[in-house]
Length: 177
Image 1 (cartoon, rainbow, N blue to C red):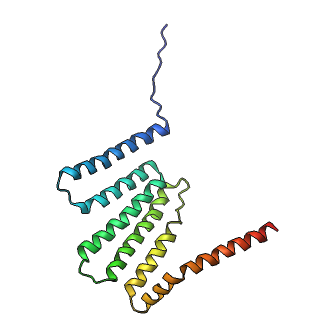
Image 2: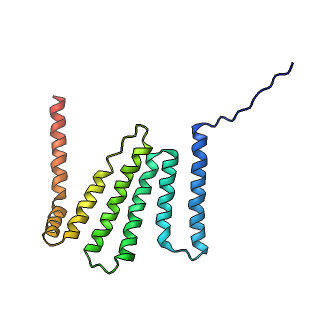
Image 3: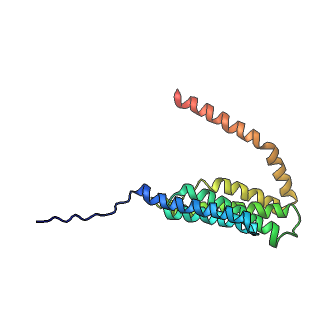
């Protein structure tokens, strides 16, 4: 009597993630190596790097990987806009377009996090820096009085930090007592 044993391949979750990480590192390294020898249009480097991180994050369902992907996507879009299509736009509108594009990258993180988070809830924290960047970009785009408001905010933000810090200290004392 012979007994047959079936050999099954049981990859651990870590092993499954390892191949994705290996492929991504090979792609990044290959892209960097290729750019040294081939006249590579540098406008495609940031979008390609962004896409690598975004795809990696989606495939492994890791929100931490979509963060650099979203940030790079916003920077790439902003660079494309101010160096390409809107290069003739005067300052501060050109800076405003860059900031609004950068803010869109932060919103992208929240949107993709619907999928990558295990509970399918979005990560809302990226909307905080994205919102602040968008407000600054919007004020720059509006110009005029909005620029004066932006200047006042630029001078007054340390006072806001001090006030919040004091509030946190005194609130903590109330909780302890």
